[in-house]
Structure formats: C-alpha cells, structure tokens
Image (cartoon, rainbow, N blue to C red; front, side, top):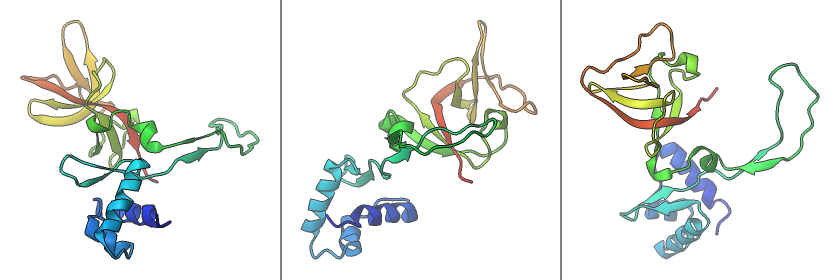
Length: 188
C-alpha cells in the first residue's frame, strides 16, 4: 500500500467533505488500473480506515489515527510537568459509541452558553440513547428544532436553556426528543 494513500484520502475527505470515488483514488495515487484501487480499498477496509455503505460507496470508518495521551495538566495553580506517554486514543472511538446512530450538528445561537456550548460549535449527538432528566438533547418542540436541557418533573416535561436570558420552553402540542448530546467540538 502506498505510504501516502491514507494521507491523500484523508486530505481529499477534509477538502471535499466526501470520500473520493475509485476513479479519483486511481488518479490521486497514480494507479494504472481500478483493480489496484479495489485491492487498496480492501486493505484499508480490513485495517478499519474506511467502510462501504449499502450501495457500495466508500465512507470513513476512522479518519484519524490514534493520538498520544501524554499525561494530565493542572487547571489551577501551575505544577511542574513531565511528559510521559500514558496511552493512545482514537477520537472516533472516544467520542462515538454507536456510529450508525451518531451525527454532528453545528450550533446556532447562544441559548446554551452556560452549558459551554457556543455558537459555531459542533455537537456530536446519538439517537440511540434514552434521554434522561438533565441531559442536553436535540428536540423538536411544536415543529421547531432546538438544543436544550431536558427537564422531567412529576407533572410535566419541558426544555430548559443554558442561558438565564432565555425562558424554558413548554410544548403546546408536541415534544419529540431526537438525540442526546454526547460531546462538543470547538476549534480555536
């Protein structure tokens, strides 16, 4: 397998927001035949780098290799630091427990800032989790979508914002919980 195959496919995915076709991989890696691409795809799939969906299209399985965990960092008073390899971690495996039920949404608005969710952040959400009281959820309330805390009392269920400037949302007709927020991603 060419050493730059994974890197080339990863860069293509990041640039184009989709996986390359077999023809694009053939051109990208200067292969002479699609058969060489089929063999490469088979190796990459066996290694857990990519998968095929029901229609045979390539989808990313794990776009990033494991990253080293070098220890912990003090958030209070500074302490002497020593770099030591503690472990490695794959962000895909760490953040996503059920790939088929997981998706990412971009946050718009400031109603969850006290929960540490800011406008422009990405949230990783899982549809397979049963929502509990206090979870941050993606919900459809009276035909509108939002991200809020789920609050269940003895007499009612409502959505609570993570910003004191906003009022709780009590459904007039219908409240459907679509997914539970598992993680927030923010780039600096």
